Amino acid sequence: MTDLHLLPISKNVVLEPIRKGFGRGLVGAGTINSNVVAACADLTESTQISLFKEKFPDRYIEIGVAEQNLVTVGSGLAAMGKIPFVSSYAAFSPGRNWEQIRTTICLNNVPVKIVGSHAGVSVGPDGATHQMLEDIALMRVLPNMVVIAPCDSIEAEKATIAMALDERPNYLRLAREATPIFTSKKTPFKIGQAQVFHEGIDVTIVSTGTMTYEALVAAEELKKHAISAEVVHMATIKPFDDKTLLKSVKKTNSVVIVEEGQINGGLGGAVAEFLGENYPIPMTRIGMRDSFGESGKVEELNDKFGLNAKQIVMSAIYIKDKKGASNAINTKTN
Amino acid sequence: MSGKYSIKDLEIISNDIREDIIKMLFEAGSGHSAGPLGLADIFTALYFDILKHDPTKPDWNERDILLLSNGHCVPVRYATMAHAGYFERKELMTLRKLGSRLQGHPERQRLPGLENTSGPLGCGLSQAAGMSLAMRMDKQTHRWIYVVLGDGEQDEGNVWEAAMLCSKYKLSNIIAITDRNNIQIDGPTESVMPLENLKDKWEAFGWHVIEINGNDIEAVIDACSMARAIREKPTMIIAHTIPGKGVDFMENDYRWHGMPPGLMDVAGDPPKAEQAKVALKELRTLGGKIKSEAHD
Image (cartoon, rainbow over all chains, first blue to last red; front, side, top):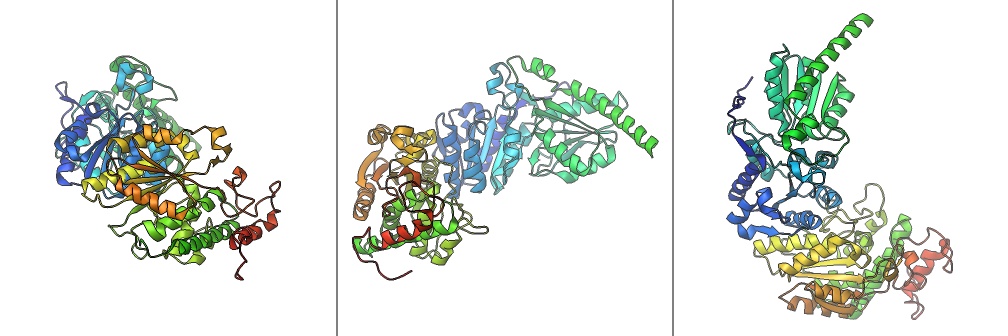
């Protein structure tokens, strides 16, 4: 296995919100390319687009609380050769303006970069209205759209720079809470490329966004249960890296999928669709099961909805047993 | 292109474009009749006098931009583009057919010369704002952006979000034209969702407003000329047009908003088999005022 330069899982891990990485990445992209511009719907600090605004005031547009306008202005900017990054909370963009994204960005095929911050239940006390859980599903079904959910602030920075070089419409999913930094500057990142962050032979754990850290914690814990888990981090949900996934599951023949969002149509949906059609194996999905979130502390919510390493461990044990049972049946039938 | 054609020339071109609209809609068997017919004078004025453009170089980076926000009126744009030399007129008969570059609603990537993909309403002005801001960043403020909007379209909140932004950033190279034909699919605009006082609304949003007869080509040219002289704010030209203009049985009748000739019988109108023929005859004789020329 090539060295991915991951930091060790430890209690002393440094925390930082992934949106901070986006803020730095956008300044970096803007420095490299003067066609990179930005617009925001009254949430500059929250989405960290404020860093770009301070550095390049002439290339920043304040839209006000108008998310439909935010993305359609983006469409116009892109038609004139700009690479616009347009940000708001994911609940509002792409939550409110899906049709404008579909027609004026995806069908029109212009490289607008939609940045949805504060996705997932980890917005905590703000409650269900602001906990965007359907954004991956909404963006994943659109032709031409690329969907990216980085795992930490370092990867978010790299993803942002890569997005500025990508000629397609992109969606970048960010979260509010400070989460562990566990990749490093040297960890490879490429749009469309999944990474095996932890090798194993018994069960594949596919994860995206900040849940990947939980998956790695779970993989360590699973060793105590004599289960060797492989963690496949899918930072890019679309285009879907079926090759990396298939290579892993052909080895493990069982899969647990974990994400901080609706499993219907989300990463869980994407993996289930692909494996159902091409390589059906025992599978279980962790994420929101057709329900909204609610107010609460982040740890309380993660515990309630099973969005943590503890749940991943239980699911991995369950799916490995199921695989064993199904193997036994197959052997009997044969 | 300014001044190349006399007003009389332009009126003849506009009428030819109307004939093509009737023929292409009849051939397609679906599509919108009233709006495109009503807009023929505005599109003729734009492509044959107002716009800086080159049909042989649709991507010319000094061209003016024309955005069609109410994409369902695209037959008038296709017909005018063909007359202006962007493609052969015979291609008009492929409208709405499989494999055609002339999609039922315009797609930028299919046909060079289109500037936006539209159909779902309310987005054109926002796209214009984005383009204008990009031009400002690139110091290309000598280029003009014309946006044609429907009136029923202005029920959409997105239009007013854009109106505020254009005003905030003083995007004075945007010249918007409202096709004020007073009809939308379900009926008169004032009964579906009242828009009046539309002039006051746009003024309240910080726009310079000019009201004209949108079927008077000279008035369209003059209004755009005046709009280009307004440098402190964007301009909205409220162009009062007659939907179905030139075809007596279609004029001012909302039932013809979203229907082609030949599709179905409409109470009080010619039978469906006769609709296209009657419409073409009326256009050729300017409603019986002149003698028809003998051509197909």
